[in-house]
Length: 423
Image (cartoon, rainbow, N blue to C red; front, side, top):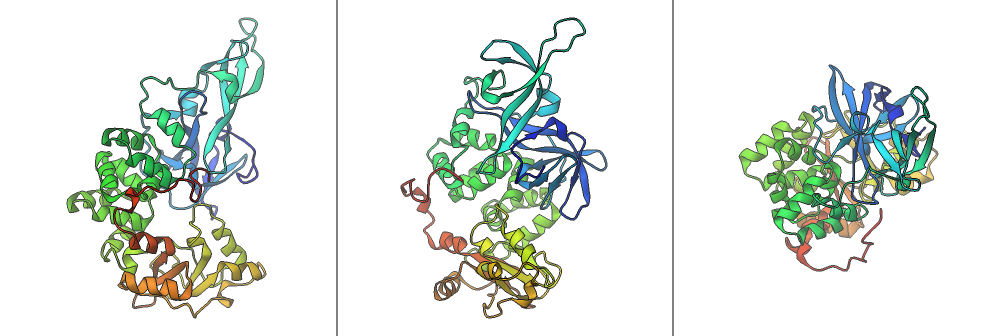
């Protein structure tokens, strides 16, 4: 079943099925799933899959990388971190630790055995346990009991106690909040409490939150994390934000972290570190949507639908000669989202590129970039080098972040603006 259409996924049934990239190449096999147990009535959260790759190495694939699941395969997108999986203290292996556990039906106080769990995806793109597949006790020595599916809230025994879990209660409250609002909460905590909560967040969530924190607070958190964990979080961050954070660290520590990051990601970050922070190169992201000239409108729209993209990055697609990873081959032009909606799906993007939107060089200062955004009502602007290769894109949110004073996060903002909770 495909994630977009599925109402639920039973996790134990995924064991042993193949994991493939979008091109159909096999990445590995599913060996387990990682869930995080939570306080009280808050259901466990699925954070990712344990996948075995060659040669018999087990890695962690976050659910943010999973785009589709059916009875025979899991499809993942983006770069997969091949670092060996190591379970963290707040994580639980579904197959290795949860299955066959005894839980209790709350209505009848009957003990049953857990055989499988079903998860569902919320509008915030998080995955939570919603149902349990359980077996009742048998009536004799060899007689197997009946099986049934029950809702999560009909059992007890899969929640953490409120005591001895100093960060869990707060984590449960933060689950539905936007990263910027979580950052505001962390800002008001003591350094010790802030670090407790940060360590309890998964890598993707922590990366999103760190991007919204003040410079001194995100440096404080990153330096307190174990080196491997810090490298994982940096890989999940927007490259421009990760480069800014690395620039705030002592050079030796920054270099040690770069050595732990996947080589392709580290190369992007090292390139960004060569630019001034308040230049186009220092503000840009190295991961805009880039397509080859023979890509179609349908392919472009499929990329734009990626929910992990900010609205500004999803507003346009950049067309360049291969390679399409930055720095690309020769940059050809831009296709705007509204224009893509007006063309037949089979139209080639090369036939509709806008060559009038002039790119900017990486050394262009903030005041020049700001004037261009204001003059032409832009949401994003391509950045190219002297050879005409696309290096990345500056978005309007990048520009605004650099225009605000360094301590703007310290000002009180009404949480109702833009919605304090939700997607």
